[in-house]
Length: 255
Ligand code: PGA
Image 1 (cartoon, rainbow, N blue to C red):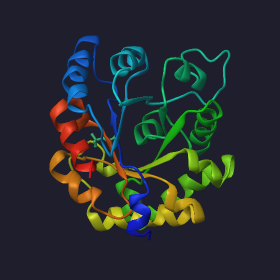
Image 2 (spheres, helix red, strand yellow):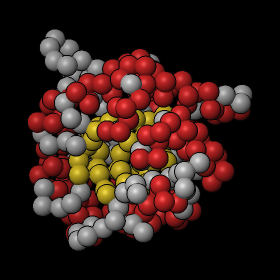
Image 3 (cartoon, helix red, strand yellow):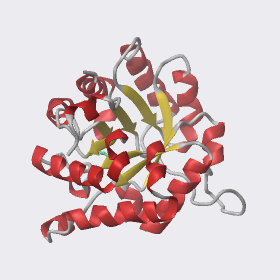
Protein backbone atom coordinates (compact mmCIF):
# COMPACT_ATOMS: atom_id res chain seq x y z
CA UNK A 1 0.00 0.00 0.00
CA UNK A 2 1.45 3.36 -0.97
CA UNK A 3 1.78 6.31 1.33
CA UNK A 4 0.09 9.71 1.11
CA UNK A 5 3.42 11.11 -0.02
CA UNK A 6 3.32 8.72 -2.98
CA UNK A 7 -0.15 9.88 -3.89
CA UNK A 8 0.69 13.58 -3.85
CA UNK A 9 3.59 12.96 -6.22
CA UNK A 10 1.18 11.58 -8.86
CA UNK A 11 -0.83 14.17 -10.79
CA UNK A 12 -4.55 13.31 -10.78
CA UNK A 13 -5.87 12.38 -14.22
CA UNK A 14 -9.46 12.27 -15.43
CA UNK A 15 -10.10 10.77 -18.84
CA UNK A 16 -13.31 10.90 -20.86
CA UNK A 17 -14.01 7.82 -22.93
CA UNK A 18 -16.70 8.87 -25.38
CA UNK A 19 -16.96 5.34 -26.80
CA UNK A 20 -19.04 5.19 -30.03
CA UNK A 21 -21.00 8.36 -29.32
CA UNK A 22 -21.12 11.81 -30.85
CA UNK A 23 -21.32 13.69 -34.13
CA UNK A 24 -19.61 16.81 -35.47
CA UNK A 25 -22.45 18.84 -34.08
CA UNK A 26 -22.77 17.29 -30.60
CA UNK A 27 -18.99 17.12 -30.14
CA UNK A 28 -18.71 20.83 -30.90
CA UNK A 29 -21.48 21.59 -28.41
CA UNK A 30 -19.99 19.46 -25.66
CA UNK A 31 -16.49 20.89 -26.11
CA UNK A 32 -17.79 24.46 -26.30
CA UNK A 33 -19.41 23.94 -22.91
CA UNK A 34 -16.64 21.99 -21.26
CA UNK A 35 -13.41 23.62 -22.52
CA UNK A 36 -14.11 27.10 -21.05
CA UNK A 37 -15.09 25.48 -17.74
CA UNK A 38 -11.67 23.85 -17.64
CA UNK A 39 -9.52 26.88 -18.44
CA UNK A 40 -6.80 28.13 -16.13
CA UNK A 41 -4.43 26.32 -13.82
CA UNK A 42 -5.50 22.99 -12.39
CA UNK A 43 -3.88 20.31 -10.36
CA UNK A 44 -5.68 17.57 -12.29
CA UNK A 45 -4.92 16.67 -15.89
CA UNK A 46 -7.87 16.06 -18.21
CA UNK A 47 -7.93 14.02 -21.42
CA UNK A 48 -10.64 13.20 -23.93
CA UNK A 49 -10.61 9.94 -25.88
CA UNK A 50 -12.81 10.42 -28.95
CA UNK A 51 -13.81 8.09 -31.81
CA UNK A 52 -11.04 7.91 -34.43
CA UNK A 53 -12.91 9.86 -37.06
CA UNK A 54 -13.49 12.85 -34.79
CA UNK A 55 -9.95 13.10 -33.42
CA UNK A 56 -8.89 15.95 -35.76
CA UNK A 57 -11.98 17.90 -34.74
CA UNK A 58 -11.32 17.41 -31.04
CA UNK A 59 -7.60 18.19 -31.38
CA UNK A 60 -8.42 21.38 -33.25
CA UNK A 61 -11.02 22.59 -30.76
CA UNK A 62 -8.82 21.78 -27.76
CA UNK A 63 -5.60 23.16 -29.24
CA UNK A 64 -5.92 26.34 -27.22
CA UNK A 65 -6.79 24.52 -24.00
CA UNK A 66 -4.81 22.45 -21.53
CA UNK A 67 -6.92 19.34 -22.26
CA UNK A 68 -5.12 16.53 -24.06
CA UNK A 69 -6.52 14.09 -26.60
CA UNK A 70 -6.43 10.33 -26.89
CA UNK A 71 -7.82 7.52 -29.01
CA UNK A 72 -9.86 4.57 -27.79
CA UNK A 73 -7.88 1.84 -29.53
CA UNK A 74 -4.87 1.27 -31.79
CA UNK A 75 -3.80 -1.45 -34.18
CA UNK A 76 -1.42 -4.13 -32.93
CA UNK A 77 0.38 -3.78 -36.26
CA UNK A 78 2.82 -1.08 -37.27
CA UNK A 79 1.58 -0.42 -40.82
CA UNK A 80 0.63 -2.15 -44.05
CA UNK A 81 -2.16 -4.32 -45.44
CA UNK A 82 -4.55 -4.30 -42.47
CA UNK A 83 -7.80 -2.97 -43.92
CA UNK A 84 -9.74 -0.78 -41.52
CA UNK A 85 -6.98 -0.50 -38.93
CA UNK A 86 -5.47 2.69 -37.47
CA UNK A 87 -1.81 2.69 -36.51
CA UNK A 88 -0.10 4.35 -33.58
CA UNK A 89 1.86 6.58 -35.95
CA UNK A 90 -1.43 7.84 -37.44
CA UNK A 91 -2.70 8.70 -33.99
CA UNK A 92 0.45 10.69 -33.25
CA UNK A 93 0.10 12.34 -36.65
CA UNK A 94 -3.35 13.73 -35.80
CA UNK A 95 -2.24 14.95 -32.37
CA UNK A 96 -3.04 12.18 -29.88
CA UNK A 97 -1.11 11.84 -26.65
CA UNK A 98 -2.95 8.91 -25.05
CA UNK A 99 -4.56 5.72 -26.32
CA UNK A 100 -6.83 3.33 -24.43
CA UNK A 101 -5.59 -0.23 -24.72
CA UNK A 102 -7.47 -3.31 -23.56
CA UNK A 103 -10.81 -1.78 -22.66
CA UNK A 104 -13.21 -4.47 -21.45
CA UNK A 105 -15.54 -3.78 -24.38
CA UNK A 106 -12.66 -4.54 -26.79
CA UNK A 107 -11.84 -7.68 -24.83
CA UNK A 108 -15.46 -8.86 -24.76
CA UNK A 109 -16.91 -7.80 -28.14
CA UNK A 110 -13.81 -7.92 -30.32
CA UNK A 111 -12.12 -10.95 -28.82
CA UNK A 112 -8.96 -9.08 -27.88
CA UNK A 113 -6.72 -11.46 -25.96
CA UNK A 114 -4.11 -10.51 -23.39
CA UNK A 115 -1.51 -11.10 -26.10
CA UNK A 116 -3.14 -8.80 -28.69
CA UNK A 117 -3.53 -6.13 -26.03
CA UNK A 118 0.14 -6.45 -25.07
CA UNK A 119 1.04 -5.98 -28.75
CA UNK A 120 -1.12 -2.85 -28.90
CA UNK A 121 0.58 -1.53 -25.77
CA UNK A 122 3.94 -2.09 -27.42
CA UNK A 123 2.93 -0.45 -30.72
CA UNK A 124 1.56 2.56 -28.85
CA UNK A 125 4.74 3.11 -26.88
CA UNK A 126 6.93 2.56 -29.94
CA UNK A 127 5.59 5.80 -31.41
CA UNK A 128 5.47 7.75 -28.15
CA UNK A 129 1.80 7.37 -27.29
CA UNK A 130 1.01 6.82 -23.63
CA UNK A 131 -1.16 3.71 -23.24
CA UNK A 132 -4.07 3.81 -20.83
CA UNK A 133 -3.97 0.13 -20.07
CA UNK A 134 -7.32 -1.24 -18.83
CA UNK A 135 -7.65 -4.25 -16.60
CA UNK A 136 -10.77 -5.67 -14.99
CA UNK A 137 -12.52 -8.84 -13.94
CA UNK A 138 -16.00 -10.09 -14.81
CA UNK A 139 -18.58 -10.63 -12.07
CA UNK A 140 -18.21 -14.35 -12.61
CA UNK A 141 -14.48 -14.22 -11.92
CA UNK A 142 -14.99 -12.03 -8.86
CA UNK A 143 -17.62 -14.35 -7.44
CA UNK A 144 -15.31 -17.29 -8.03
CA UNK A 145 -12.66 -15.54 -5.94
CA UNK A 146 -10.46 -15.03 -9.00
CA UNK A 147 -10.47 -11.24 -9.30
CA UNK A 148 -6.85 -10.73 -8.23
CA UNK A 149 -5.62 -13.62 -10.38
CA UNK A 150 -7.44 -12.21 -13.43
CA UNK A 151 -5.90 -8.78 -13.06
CA UNK A 152 -2.53 -10.34 -12.28
CA UNK A 153 -2.63 -12.29 -15.57
CA UNK A 154 -3.72 -9.24 -17.57
CA UNK A 155 -0.79 -7.25 -16.17
CA UNK A 156 1.68 -10.08 -16.59
CA UNK A 157 0.90 -10.45 -20.32
CA UNK A 158 2.08 -6.88 -20.89
CA UNK A 159 5.05 -7.19 -18.54
CA UNK A 160 6.15 -10.31 -20.43
CA UNK A 161 6.05 -8.48 -23.75
CA UNK A 162 7.47 -5.05 -22.90
CA UNK A 163 9.05 -5.42 -19.46
CA UNK A 164 8.05 -3.84 -16.18
CA UNK A 165 9.95 -0.60 -16.86
CA UNK A 166 7.61 0.24 -19.75
CA UNK A 167 4.88 1.02 -17.23
CA UNK A 168 6.74 4.20 -16.30
CA UNK A 169 5.32 5.61 -19.56
CA UNK A 170 1.79 4.29 -19.10
CA UNK A 171 -1.37 4.76 -17.09
CA UNK A 172 -3.35 1.84 -15.69
CA UNK A 173 -7.14 1.86 -15.35
CA UNK A 174 -8.84 -0.68 -13.12
CA UNK A 175 -12.33 -1.16 -14.53
CA UNK A 176 -14.31 -4.05 -13.10
CA UNK A 177 -16.47 -5.28 -15.99
CA UNK A 178 -19.55 -5.44 -13.76
CA UNK A 179 -19.19 -1.74 -12.94
CA UNK A 180 -18.74 -0.44 -16.50
CA UNK A 181 -21.93 1.24 -17.71
CA UNK A 182 -24.06 -0.45 -15.04
CA UNK A 183 -24.47 2.30 -12.45
CA UNK A 184 -22.92 -0.07 -9.90
CA UNK A 185 -19.63 1.39 -8.71
CA UNK A 186 -17.13 -0.82 -6.89
CA UNK A 187 -17.01 -0.26 -3.13
CA UNK A 188 -14.08 1.68 -1.63
CA UNK A 189 -12.83 -1.59 -0.09
CA UNK A 190 -12.87 -3.37 -3.45
CA UNK A 191 -11.12 -0.48 -5.19
CA UNK A 192 -8.53 -0.14 -2.45
CA UNK A 193 -7.74 -3.83 -2.48
CA UNK A 194 -7.30 -3.99 -6.26
CA UNK A 195 -5.35 -0.76 -6.64
CA UNK A 196 -3.02 -1.81 -3.82
CA UNK A 197 -2.57 -5.18 -5.51
CA UNK A 198 -1.79 -3.60 -8.90
CA UNK A 199 0.69 -1.20 -7.37
CA UNK A 200 2.39 -4.06 -5.53
CA UNK A 201 2.67 -6.01 -8.82
CA UNK A 202 4.61 -3.08 -10.25
CA UNK A 203 7.28 -3.43 -7.59
CA UNK A 204 9.70 -0.57 -7.05
CA UNK A 205 8.26 1.58 -9.86
CA UNK A 206 4.69 1.20 -8.58
CA UNK A 207 4.69 4.33 -6.42
CA UNK A 208 5.22 6.55 -9.48
CA UNK A 209 2.51 5.09 -11.72
CA UNK A 210 -0.97 6.51 -12.01
CA UNK A 211 -3.74 3.98 -11.44
CA UNK A 212 -7.22 5.20 -12.36
CA UNK A 213 -10.55 3.69 -11.42
CA UNK A 214 -13.29 3.30 -14.01
CA UNK A 215 -16.85 2.01 -13.86
CA UNK A 216 -19.93 4.14 -13.17
CA UNK A 217 -18.00 7.15 -11.87
CA UNK A 218 -20.38 10.09 -11.42
CA UNK A 219 -20.03 13.53 -9.80
CA UNK A 220 -21.70 12.28 -6.62
CA UNK A 221 -19.44 9.27 -6.07
CA UNK A 222 -16.15 10.56 -7.51
CA UNK A 223 -14.83 12.30 -4.39
CA UNK A 224 -15.04 9.21 -2.20
CA UNK A 225 -13.18 7.14 -4.80
CA UNK A 226 -10.53 9.80 -5.41
CA UNK A 227 -9.92 10.04 -1.65
CA UNK A 228 -8.49 6.51 -1.62
CA UNK A 229 -4.69 6.41 -1.35
CA UNK A 230 -4.07 4.34 -4.45
CA UNK A 231 -6.60 6.02 -6.76
CA UNK A 232 -5.12 8.69 -9.04
CA UNK A 233 -8.17 9.64 -11.06
CA UNK A 234 -10.82 8.07 -13.27
CA UNK A 235 -11.68 6.78 -16.70
CA UNK A 236 -15.22 8.00 -17.31
CA UNK A 237 -17.73 6.74 -19.86
CA UNK A 238 -21.39 7.75 -19.60
CA UNK A 239 -20.85 10.74 -17.30
CA UNK A 240 -18.31 12.20 -19.76
CA UNK A 241 -20.98 12.76 -22.40
CA UNK A 242 -22.33 15.83 -20.64
CA UNK A 243 -20.20 18.85 -19.83
CA UNK A 244 -21.61 19.42 -16.36
CA UNK A 245 -21.28 15.87 -15.10
CA UNK A 246 -17.78 15.50 -16.56
CA UNK A 247 -16.78 18.84 -15.07
CA UNK A 248 -18.11 17.75 -11.67
CA UNK A 249 -15.87 14.68 -11.75
CA UNK A 250 -12.85 16.72 -12.86
CA UNK A 251 -13.41 19.15 -10.02
CA UNK A 252 -13.51 16.28 -7.52
CA UNK A 253 -10.05 15.22 -8.74
CA UNK A 254 -8.69 18.75 -8.72
CA UNK A 255 -7.61 18.85 -5.08
P1 PGA B 1 -18.86 4.15 -17.45
O1 PGA B 1 -17.71 3.59 -18.42
O2 PGA B 1 -18.30 5.36 -16.75
O3 PGA B 1 -20.02 4.48 -18.35
O4 PGA B 1 -19.17 3.05 -16.49
C1 PGA B 1 -16.38 3.58 -18.03
C2 PGA B 1 -15.52 3.05 -19.14
O5 PGA B 1 -15.96 2.17 -19.89
O6 PGA B 1 -14.37 3.48 -19.35
